[in-house]
Image 1 (cartoon, rainbow, N blue to C red):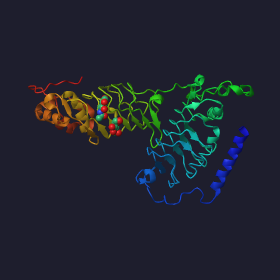
Image 2 (cartoon, rainbow, N blue to C red):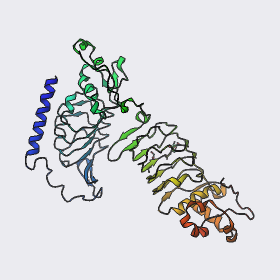
Image 3 (cartoon, rainbow, N blue to C red):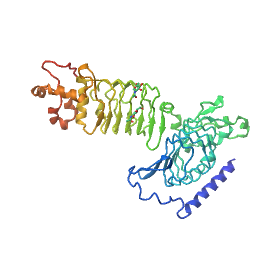
Image 4 (cartoon, protein in one colour):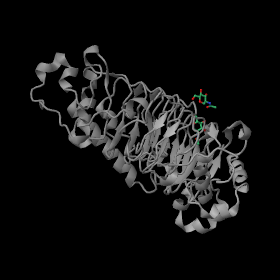
Length: 440
Ligand SMILES: *[C@@H]1O[C@H](CO)[C@@H](O)[C@H](O)[C@H]1NC(C)=O
Ligand SMILES: *[C@@H]1O[C@H](CO)[C@@H](O)[C@H](O)[C@H]1NC(C)=O
């Protein structure tokens, strides 16, 4: 077995070298030239309706969610990132991807893959990332990975691994200390006595009890680097992670009551919609500094603490629609320097003095596109746009009284303070038309 593997490596490497050395070998057919030069600018569509685009100068081919059962002929051979998540692929045949000689990442998660032939990844000598989580793999041998000398990131969790003898070479391969990012979180589904054991950590000799007498010098302790010793973060069990085109954590519809702890720091997009997160506590998102898109819609959210969005410096889009928000506490939005889009619809906004903070803030941040800001109460303003309510409030407010007041708006943004004095509403001191609740 060992000798066989070694021979196979030599064969494959030799083969790859030969191909490389051939002049013009591994090039595309030249039809990719001059197209889509910009980043993500040009999108070209292929058979099966795949989308081709460039990001950071690298060609991505997005064939996700397309009911595909196999790789189709005619896809651009100079693809660097191939996205095939959520299709219906069951078997990966030998040489399935060998035309994509520049491939660096291959996303095959959430298919129905139950079998991978030994030469399936032949030719992928540049591949660094392979995603096979959420499939139906029970068995895989180390040989499958031999054509992938640069593989440094492998996801195979959420597959029903059958922990018997035939998994021995894979388990040993994953446990080599330098392979620390290969196969984390993958667990045995059977036999019953090994169910739940992590492939990374289990004793390989348990796989083959019948052969135990032949195994003489197995290391007693499996290396436990800091990564492996870490507790399983809870987002792993409830959320799905996608690496391409952007690191995306999909935690939709999981009945979550809280934002998952220990979020991975490289996430750019996170979907927490359709959960049951009623309260956002301070600093729940501080670890996800790169987050640009956050979806919190349909959560019954009715309370957002002032520092809840602390750390989300780069957040661009925030969806808070279909919640139970009535107003924003003073300061809640101050952390969102780069926000561009705020979805606020389907919330029971109360049009009283508490809502003014939100309107001040929006006036100071004219680049922010927002939607759905409609009063639901009190009855006299129900159905009004919140801006209109605030304007009415202003119009009724005599100017000389305005200037004497201190107001939260003054603290918001020193630069525009002067001009804002004319625009912003002030609480009334004369005969009260509406009830005024002061912010503390
Ligand atoms: C947020 O999630 C909801 C429900 O899953 C979806 O309808 C909505 O389009 C999402 N918002 C954005 C901005 O993608
Ligand atoms: C709004 O949220 C509720 C539960 O919070 C959900 O049942 C409903 O489907 C959501 N509506 C939309 C349009 O998403």
